[in-house]
Amino acid sequence: MPHIHKNIDFTVAAGIVNSGRIALVHHRKMRRWLLPGGHIELNEDPDQALLREIHEETGLRQKDLVILNEKPKLKSEGTKFLHTPSYIDIHQISQTHRHVVLVYFLISKTDRLRQAPKEHFDLRWVAKNQLKELKPKLTPQIKFYCLAALSAANSLSFAD
Image (cartoon, rainbow, N blue to C red):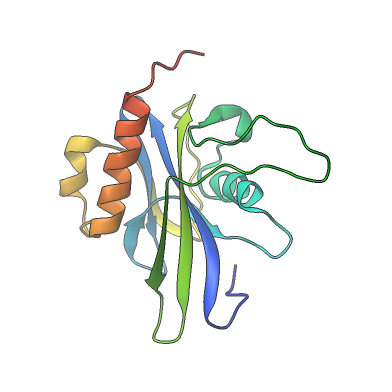
């Protein structure tokens, strides 16, 4: 999606883990490895954008995923509680434009991924010991998010 604001856009990123591996996309435009994700559209909340972007970029559907981030179980008329991101950052896209990214961690119940070839050179599951071998190298923040997502998923005893 094109930028919808002049100076800052809000985006989501998904650290999706399956069997000790994290899903990464080799982004065509950015020419680097990233977590699946993208822009929050004007008619979406972050939870909706997260699930839409994951599906567009990996083929995974909500039924395939467990979001590890918390949200209140409270029901309140007129209020929708959203998942709290694990991390939030703001980074430069160009000299005049920045992105605020809300980073979420998820577990995938399946290892079947579907690449979006118009957006990515590659889509793959990457184990912790393979992160340093990727070309081009991961940026420090993406490597940090990968390790944090793998750690969060590893600390759970998930059975389904």
